[in-house]
Image 1 (tube, helix red, strand yellow):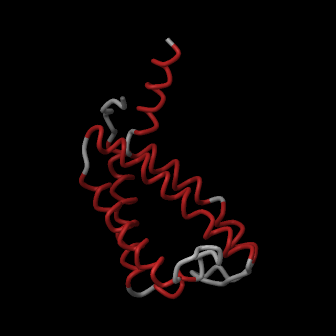
Image 2: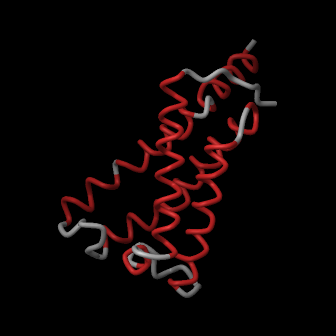
Length: 145
């Protein structure tokens, strides 16, 4: 069982920034950046690209709201869930790079390649800012004892 962990002021601020980022990104899926997000949907996804973008936008808005509102163990679970979400959408970033698709100002292979390294940063940010990283470490230590 994951334990409730205390988060610092810096973690709380970082979580607020990340939650706000998720709300803006999710809103972008539904409105102003809809077409650019379609560029990231891999061709192997057997659904209409616009439908995938709309659905993922709704999910991102929900994740952003949850990130801002949840407390205790639920916040820790949210951090793990958000990190998993970032891992799940990573193939879209790879698709954009391997197919040389320009979107979001990523108009060179070098820029698209550089973006690939940002996804693990987002995953770490989600885990750290929610206290999930600390809870997982505690859980691992107890399992060893």
